[in-house]
Amino acid sequence: MALTTQDPAVAESEPHAPAASGRSRQRSFPPMTAKLAIGLSIAGAIALFGLVGPYLVGDPSKVDDIGLSGPGGGFLLGTTQTGQDVFAQLAYATRGSLTIGLVVGALTLVLSTFFGVVGAYIGGVVDESFSLFSNVMLVIPGLPLVIVISSYVPNKSVWLIAFVLALTGWAGSARVLRGFTLSLRNRDYVLASRVSGERSWRILTVEVLPNLIPLLASQVVFAIIFAILGEAGLSFLGLGASGSFTWGTMLYFAQNGLALRLGAWWWFIPPGLMLALFGAALSLINFSIDEIINPKLRSQTRAARRTWRMSRSQLKSAKEATL
Image (cartoon, rainbow, N blue to C red; front, side):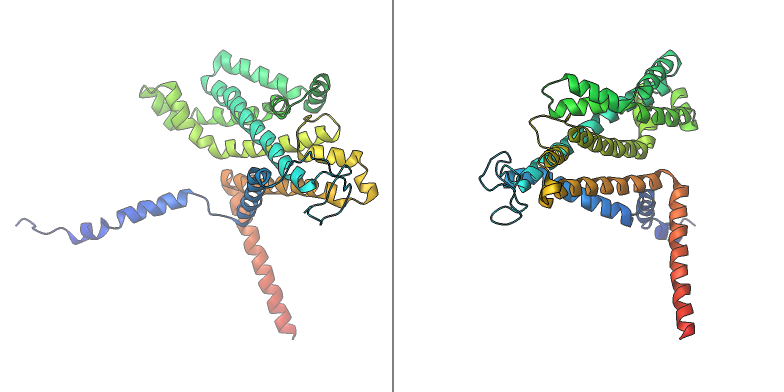
């Protein structure tokens, strides 16, 4: 006799299929950790300030007759030795430093992906040539080269500083990406795509690059940290961008104006604090990305957190027992 109704087991399992797939997709994404949340919050707040702040303040180069005055009197963070608004300079400096960081991060991503991922996937003479060029750029000392290039260019813009920093900082990321790509190109799914006749560019963009996204994100975050700190160091030495405001140029002019000796803390603490906070936020994000890349590191972090909670509970029970 033919069945006229649907099997109860099949009917019961079909409505739950989308939920199961949704749960599997949810498990594929890492959970939001405290480090990642704090890092994203601080970095997002600083980025929002750099994006919106310059539209809400006046001219940062305007000279006033109220020189080296503390916060108050219409100036939220006081004035410099020549009467310039420190808060306005901080807003423009935040935009300038973030611009350098983003440009260096984008250029480092493009260069390291091209010389590391593409060369390793193609292999042969191309890989050897790209690897040789990466090794040559890696052994060249970055900071002295940046100092030499900056010293020979009289008018240095933010874009020139970003280009020089990216030119001297992409080789390390390319070496890391090359090693991971060499291990990925021999995986079964990549070999299966080659056997099926897929084009090389499609295999590279669909099969290889998606597996490198966490590593690429980590390399970009590290490049942004390197760029902002490198620009601050160059500007502190007087070799930074001329005619532009960055956190490094603010510290440079504060040093030349003897802000520390005169007790003008409002001149050098805000840019230094922004530099430290943004670097710490990107470091927290980078640590979280490392935990995503390395599952062992994530499991060790969870085990350490459980051990810490157990030790707290044991200490609390011991105190209660002594009472």
